[in-house]
Image (cartoon, rainbow, N blue to C red; front, side):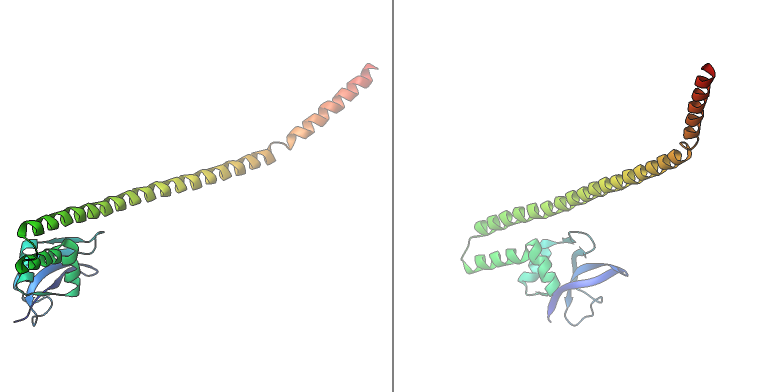
Length: 182
């Protein structure tokens, strides 16, 4: 019996999540399976992969063949590297202590890079939000300044018309009073 480690789809339309399962190669995608190893959610950034690493390692060592997508996930999380090191131990190229130490070093480095990506995404999102707020504030100030100028122009057009007529009357009155005085 050929055994595969593959994804079984679940979730609603256009928001799929997947179960990582061990199943007979002849069974349908969402049909019977031997064991559920975990879940995979591609809708988050970075994608969320939760699974039992020890059981996945066990199935890999017993000969289960992962599909391409599951192979990429297992490689991303270190199961394939752990299998590679264990095969080296079985052949006598490494000791178990050295293999465990190499895997632990790799795992801490990988976890650091994943956390760096998460914090980088959060920082980029907050920076984008700050930049958008600054741009929106700038546009709002430009609009309010244009509105103020428009109102000032309307007031200036309405107010100065009577003022020049008053000045001409005062100058004419001053000329008439100067003639009367003479």
